[in-house]
Length: 306
Image (cartoon, rainbow, N blue to C red; front, side, top):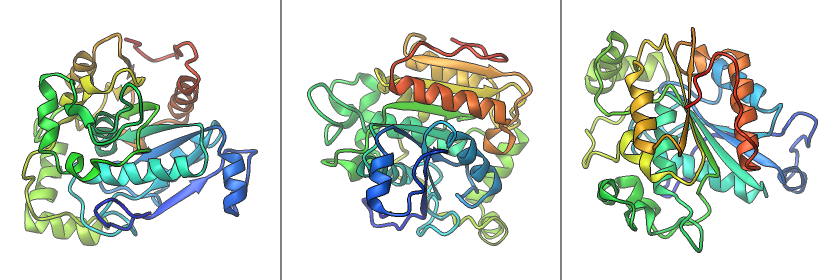
């Protein structure tokens, strides 16, 4: 795929189990009449990582799946901006899913990918009377909307359509930028902000990070959350997350509004795709496909549904 700012993104389409093998475009379009789930991985991940492949395999029991590597990760081009222009990568994946003929597209993001799916849903909304396009969140979206006007991804996507999502799942997502309240996040900031850390990331983790700070600071996940409705939103977080404590998911749901977002607090779950058990992934996929048909909410064991 190629993003609106010209970055080449490595991506893969995996048909639903029992569906088309996806060997040609015509077959893929025939299989694409159902929903698709687009998976947005966490920082230092890629579509080749075993954890991301495992997520894709579980989700493929329920729907077609598109996985991709964010810019600066794996075989994709560019350099990571750690959640800013990655919105453009996700938008390209959603547009590709729609080009295959899928009736609905769900975005499911983990950790950094969770922040990206929240921001993407806020910046690529279906407005009354048409698809999401140039207006973005600035059109009557409330006091937080102005933050999006200076957002690089918001400026880049203006005038483009077809990249909106029909449901959003944010797993292990941060609510705020620059959070350093845990040892794990202090290590992440060292990897992002220090030259030695960027070298370790580049050669040890195959993650190439842009050396420039954000300018301007992009719309944060908690600022994006109230702009997502009426698109269904699920926030999933573990009570053993070593990166982001539970005030992050609670802040996201409070900002979105309890009537607009569903919250699952998972007992014993750690962080993102590397720790997600198959049973949780199954429930997430079932929620995602049900929401594209507006089915009743799923209440699974081990969750707090808010």
